[in-house]
Length: 389
Image (cartoon, rainbow, N blue to C red; front, side, top):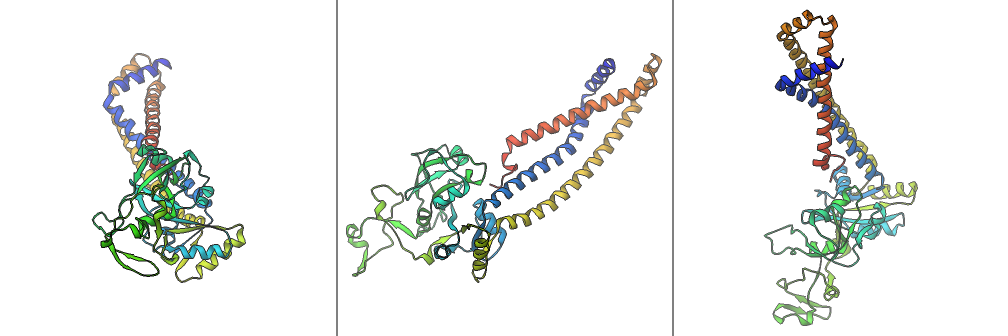
């Protein structure tokens, strides 16, 4: 057996090009279904786990998929914002904890998420260094965002302006990094978290400037008993510091303060049903169950996966047919070689065993190449495995 194995190995080494082509052609139909299965399983696990940890999401009427995926993964959505007043109304009903979520801006390309301390408790997030956002202008970086930006507690980063050439829009806000969150393996790792009021500064609904009595007289448009009207040319603070923190104030009513969504965490199933029914009865707002939406979404994913599996099966069948053809032609070309083996006294089954060993070595090399490619893809393209971030 060792002699035939050595002979097979040397034969494959002698015809390197043919061997390499066969190994590659067999590795591809092995790699594709394995990669498809792993990617689909990763997406499924993350989607299901993140949706299960979020009982209800309230937002504007429209696509349930946009609302849920936008709230779970901080993606920009075309839905209108839901006002802060709606969160206050839900909280006043006393049927669960309402968590604001504002994800309409970015900071250095990462989602800038305005929320409240209850969000960190819901997701089980904790600070690995520093603290969570406490003051206006504070930011906490997700683990991956901190690693990519190379920032830590005490550093600063700027938000990304939405309208680069529109001087009427608020300028980029300089944020102070208060802490870095511990890795969670979720979309939270690639986000920058701030207090929801900090997000409203970027909306232009909250700002800070020098006291009215200290402003240049040329910027004062008028004075009344109720206040002072200032010119829009007044330069606002683009950074919150301990010195100017008291100078920041709101210029909007609760009905004008926008949120991307409201996460509702009821105490039990009864409260969940009541909140969902109350919100969905409105003509403007909807409450969606993330688990139900994700299950519906996965139904479409499984259909696509079945199509990919069918394509992989066709590819595997055609590859096997091609391999059989190559082996048949190779056997004809090697007929004189095999006759020489018979004249040397080789048994009748030796030729068949020799071909079998060659095919076994090629198959083993193909499996090794496919698994190596799968492992390499996992490390080189981590975003493909179980991540919608």
